Amino acid sequence: RKEVEQDPGPFNVPEGATVAFNCTYSNSASQSFFWYRQDCRKEPKLLMSVYSSGNEDGRFTAQLNRASQYISLLIRDSKLSDSATYLCVVNPMDSSYKLIFGSGTRLLVRP
Amino acid sequence: DVKVTQSSRYLVKRTGEKVFLECVQDMDHENMFWYRQDPGLGLRLIYFSYDVKMKEKGDIPEGYSVSREKKERFSLILESASTNQTSMYLCASNRGDVAGGYTFGSGTRLTVV
Image 1 (spheres, each protein chain N blue to C red):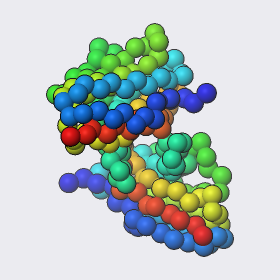
Image 2 (tube, rainbow over the protein chains, first blue to last red):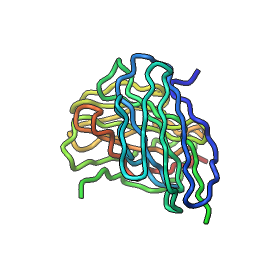
Image 3 (tube, one colour):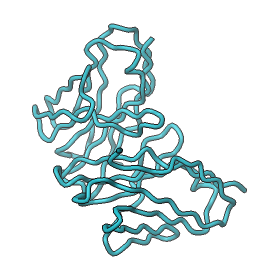
């Protein structure tokens, strides 16, 4: 079983739609969680951290469910520019600086 | 603008060649990482370094080595390139813990023929 699992998609949604991605992680002792965004042929960039209490940044909301070991990302009012691959990222407890990346969920926002 | 710079965007090398991928960061970060990214497999950690001259194996170190002689520079070495090392290679750094995530370089797409 992979340490971090994501639905690869693609999720194909119209502009203005709300879309949600989930990600599951296998190590219950994982400490920190993140969502990264990766545009085609570009490097990943930090989108947002995921806190136990949830985290909202404009149209983006991230949630953590430790009991079920999943993380979610909700995007409201999707824009064409949101088209990208979203990577779920986890920091395992055995390292203070190592991150484990999911394979990513691809989002396509159409006009 | 702080950044992580990888020396080459695209490289084509022959099987058996020794290949050097260079990465430089200007943020005075302690930690540096080399990942490779393949479709369906995501990013996989090859090696990382938490200090000058210090290195640790990641999940897939076989066929690779690294060098960190200066804090700002972390080099990935393919001792004898093989076709299964064709991939996107990403360098990253962070300051000392994961709270701020990583900063990535723009990647080197290596093709071994």
